[in-house]
Length: 283
Image 1 (cartoon, helix red, strand yellow):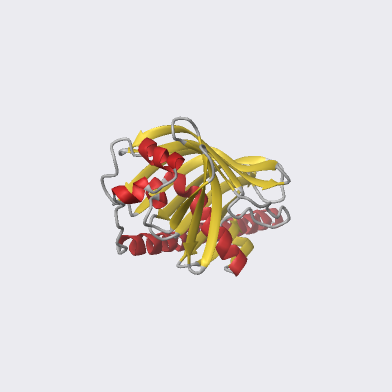
Image 2 (cartoon, rainbow, N blue to C red):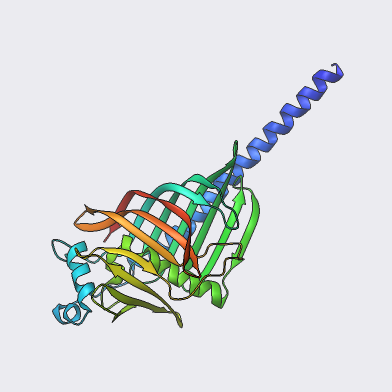
């Protein structure tokens, strides 16, 4: 065999082995994410949810009462235990400026602040990265893997990251309004005719966001009351989300469009904007 043929054969063999390894790693990564999701679903299935009564609803701040009337146009008929969401849009990686098309999936519990987020983002040509955040039983884990194989960022729960993850669950809750009902882990405090503070408490931690509602009762934004740290290698929850294009799905009116941003010194730095492409509520 000539030296040229030997070289070509060696290159093809190397590429084949690399492709097999990447394929195996991608399957393994997806399996790990599936396991996180199943943990959320199993715990949510076993959790009893008490439906709010008339007094619970009457004691809410007026803009929050209007909000629940808006998102449950036919009334609150059943306890939603968790929600599964598919999304697509544009994502900007931490400490960068360019956006890339991204698809994502979330599984979010209602009565507990459990959440799993996973996303797939192309980087350069055929190179992609998959990232996930998992917050379960008060502990978070996040990782980003190049080609679903090479870990480029891996963080485990600390008090700060766990608190950020609790706020992340709260920030995503307008996609599952059942999580914001009285009697759960969220308390509402009045601010004015169009704003109210939502406070989530769980696992000895607390996170809050200020909701702004429009004239119809739609929650159009959730915003932190403190600046974010723009130097971290992760976006965390972000400090601001705007939501729009409310549509009724299975009797629940939810916002299909979103833009999530970091926020500091009064300025927004968007990093994830897009639409919900599929959603299902699990009872």
